[in-house]
Structures are given as structure tokens and as C-alpha cells.
Amino acid sequence: MLQIIPPLALTALTLQLTTTYEQRYQCYTKAVANGERIIRAATFSLTIASIIRSYKRKSIELFFRNVVCCANKLTEEEEKLAWNEQHAQGADTLTKTITSMQGFYVKAAQIVASRPDSIPQEYADALSVFTDDNDPLPVGVIKEVIEKELLDQRGEQFDDVFEEFDEAPLGSASIAQVHRAVLSKKYGHREVAVKVQRPSIEEKLMGDIANLKQVAKVFRGADLPVDYYAVFSELEEQLQDEFDFETEAASMERMHNILTTDENGAQRESPIVTPRSVPALVSKRVLVMDFLKGVPLSRASDMMKSKGIAPDGVEAKLFARKLLKSLTTAFGWSILESGFFHADAHPGNIFVLDDGRIGLIDFGQVKQVDRDYRETVAKVILALDERKSDDNDDDLHRIGNSTEGLDIELKDDAPAHGHAAIAMWLFDGSVETFPDEYDENEMSPNSPVKAMKEFPSDLVLLARSTVLVKGLARRFGVRWSLSQEWAPIARRVLNKGTDVTTKDTEEQKGQCKPHRAKQQLKAWSEQKAKTIVTHLPPPMKKKALSAVLKHQQKRDAKKQKVRG
Image (cartoon, rainbow, N blue to C red; front, side):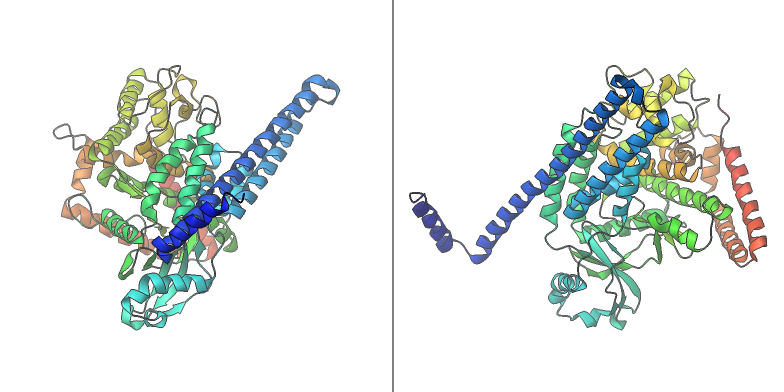
């Protein structure tokens, strides 16, 4: 030991003499960060291992009770309850670990929770708490970041910019925290949302995602409904831009333009509300933007209960259809028309606004696909929409051939129509019977997802959007086909030239001024009707809404092709 000390002392002295304080501090913080990453990786891995061992113990226990000790054999209902209890214990263990660790593990929980159809309900319920508020920072820390990152360089004080600033955050996520504020007269005297990045969060989160990739890689060959290694790999690439709020502000502006301007440059009404930044108040770690008054979708059910709206009532069903239509149109325009789309949609980022409109926030993660890729998606959509039935061989081959262009490779033992089944799973939630005995349930060994060798990187984030809509439709009990809704957009994008169908002609009519004026008049009339219905007495309001719902259902039934 004594022989080691002199060299160490000499090294320390050399560093002291040859480096600045800032350089030594950076070395120290990097060493601490590396040590913390190792500890976090070990903690999470041990938790996963513990949960897996508990499932193995439960399997052995049930085997002995049902096979060895036949006298104590469980009924089917008792065995189901035993597994539900096991799921609840595993979900509780995982939730506690994520709560204590925070960081990107929260983001991972959001991803998993956004797919309640692919995991046991106990896990979906437990992880859903991570969609909104997590470990809020003190407002004093938030103000220090704002002053350092935004105000100091401008030579301004906090009160020069903000007349009001709420201490309680609107939301606190893994990367940033958002507060409501009111700008001073100098900056327009209006209500805004202020997004502030957590101090020193970038290295922590990138370390977390590297850890999650390693864990996901170990279980990549397991019977999981989602290839989380591919998901986390794609997110790792996308996450780099999420730490730069100037890039996010540019993405917000670009998305606003996509949704409010068609491909011919004509103005159109956006199906959703997206915030825009205050250009003078944006830095790499602080973003001031429009304030959207409403609640996240994850809290919408509580809001409805407080207003006396029954989950299975007419108002709830109309809301579900409006939500699905708004998101479907917004995703269709952005994915198919421009290839630029929101890549992190989940119930915490989707808002139900006070005026009934749907909002979408948080543009830190966006994805750009090239023209060839979005045209391939458009061809898949048309192949699905124009099929005569779900089991017609010619249709299935056409769908499958189109889907191959998405770089999807099937396993060697996958049934013949694997590509077609994957396309149906991605873009058509109205399918009742899949080809080749594929099963829509992603927990099933016959799920189309299990037929893929791996999830293509470009498809990962696109699938998050389509499967989110499909999951919401299932939750609300609505049969919803993205391919049917997106088909007019796909035809317009592909521009088939002389091979014009009736639907193509209808879409082209939409570009002429008289037809556009008619659409605007229709939108105005619908808004007026909504205002009138809102102020009707409860009995009359219920009848009016029931009539609207029946009209929408009949319209959808006409649009839905009869197949089989």
C-alpha cells in the first residue's frame, strides 16, 4: 500500500499543476456519473432478475399443486387469481424501483404503459402513474435554470419577463418540468407554459437507456409481444434532439405548418391543437410556449366523472370518436404528406382541452422518413383499403408485397401471409379474423409481431403512433380502421395520374375554392350546432347527442366495406 501512495500522490500533483479547476471538475463529475450509471444498471437488473425468479417460483408452486399434489389441485378460476396476484406483486416491485430511480426508466414505463393490450393489466395499471407527474423539482431550482439559461445572457431579471409564475408544476417528466406563467407586458402579457430542462439530466438519461438496451437484449429471444431492444435503440437515436429545446421549438413550428397548410399551400383547419413557441424566449434548456387549457388524456376519465358523464354514455362515445378522428387525421397528414411526425405520443402528451378540442404537446421526439418510405406506407394503406375480404389470396399477396417495402423480414417458419397480417395489425383495427390463423392479441404466440425477425428502426416510432390509436379505439369499444381513414390521403400522396378512382376525384374536388368554402361553412355550422346543444336542458341534450351518435355510426357503416 505504501508503495502505491507516492505514484498516486504524484499523479494528483501533476493534475493539479497541469489542468484548470474546470477541467478537474469535469473529470470528477464524469467519474461520479460513470459510477452512478453502474449502480443504476445493477439496481434495475437485480430488480428484473428478482421478478423473473418470483415467476419461476410461482410456476413450480402451481405445478406441484396441480400435478404432484392432485388433492390440492386448483380450479381454473383459482389459478387465474394466483397469477393475477403474482402480476400485482411483480408490478408493485417494478413500480417502486422506477419511482426511486426516475430518469429514462420513467420514459420506458410510459412506453410500456401506452400498450395496455400487450402486458398484464396489473402492470398496465401500475405503470400508468408515470404518464404525467414524476418527482417534481423545487420551484427555486427551476427559476435558477431559467435565469442561467435564458435571462442572464439577455441582461434581464425574472420579473422583467414573467408577471406570474405558478410554483406548482403542470407536469414533471423525466427530462423537463412545465409551469404555467403569465408574461409581462413587454412580452405580450399572455398566459404561457414554461418548459425547463432538469439540471445535468442528459448524461443520466443516456446512461439509463444504454442500461435498458442491455436488459432488453438479454430478453430479445424471449416470448415478448414487443421487441423492446429495437424500441430503445431507436429512442436512443431520437433522444439526442430531445435535450435541445431550440430544435423542439423548430419542430413545433414545422408541425403547425403541416397541420394548417395542405400540400398546395392552401390553409386548412388543423384537426388538433399544437402549441407554438414564443421565439424571443427560447434557449437550449428553456422553452416558453402557448398554454393549452385542459387535462391530459390519462386524467380524462376523472374529469368526465366529475362532470357526471357516464363511461358508456352517449357523450363519452362521441368524445371517443372525436378523439380517434382528430388523432388519425393529424397522424395521417404528418406521416403520409410530409414524413415528419410526432414520435412520442402517449396519454400524457395528448390533451383534452376545455373547449372540447384535442391537443398534442411535447415535440422533443419527432421522426422524419423519406419520400420513398411514406409512399410505401401509402401503398400498404391502399392495398388494405381496396381488399375485397380478409382472406382473399390475391388481396393478401398485394398487401404482403407492399408491406415488404417497409424492410420487414419474417422468420423462416412464419406462415405465408405474415407480411399481410403485420399490415393489418399495424393499420386496421377493424379486422376480426387474421389470415393463416394469426392472432391479433400480441400476448399470443400467433401474434403477427412474433413473425418478424426484428422490428425495423424506421417502423418503430411510426408503429407507436398507429398502435396508440388502435389501443385507444379498443379501450373505447370502437371499431376503427386507420387504413380506411388514411386511404384518401394515401391516394392524394401517390397521385396515380390517369388511373383516377371516384375517391381520387372527390379528393381533387377538395382542392377547388368552392368546395373548400363549403367545407369551411360545414365546420362553422358544426361548431354552431355544438354550441346550441351544449346549452340545451339535460333531457333534450341527451336526445340531441344520441341523434348525432347514430348519424356518425350510420355514416361509418356506409364507409365500412362489406368483406367476406
